[in-house]
Image (tube, rainbow, N blue to C red; front, top):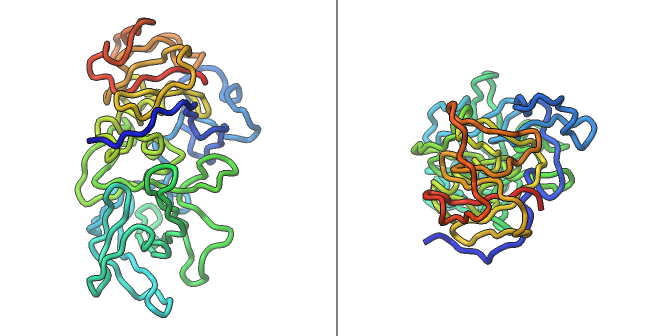
Length: 326
């Protein structure tokens, strides 16, 4: 049974309540012909469509980490350690994995470690692109106002914690101080299509500022709902109407959601319907999220038109209903 929350009347805004800036190099090619500057609300920002993810180590994007130590997705887990009784990093953790966003493991004496017990832990990984070893350290854990999530920084073991901190995730929104990631068990996401796939012995690091992590922050994690709803929500975050990885919006565009679970509701029920969503993308479209988008064709065929009278029950397989604006 999915976890049900009170119906919320809120505006779900990509990149948070205020428009945020993607990091340099994160922007994807815009599907719009209008110059990118037209859509930049702050000078110097490199805007693009909402991102799938941007977890990275010193500029190298990585997301899905094999917990058994196999090389995957451009990196390889070598060791996880936490401080010993005297504060030194001597306790090696085994069977490190995630369940419902929470980390679990055993130290070398069989003592279970979980949740906030991982704060201070250091994760040594080998990065394929650079041939270097990097160390991530967990500096924060929270389960307040959303799913459990962890904040990682890249640290220099020889010189201590980097200052200023180099976070592995970009800030959720400027000034928020939130650089966290939601950790998904046995999940990988195809970077070209945005399709979620099951992969055993895997932790997917979903930054909360980007689609996969944001879908969980909005209440649509696999453990609060199910895998199909999480996939549906990550499509809706990016206005990926065709379900092929092509976003039809830009970062900072406002959207509000309702769903079959009663997790979220519309702040303005009179706003125009954008689309009804399933795991493969939009089942129908009425008003595209971005003003530059007129008609959307998927595999050469126009997406069906939503009627003004339609509700979630009118579209078989619809899990989420989106409306434009506030």
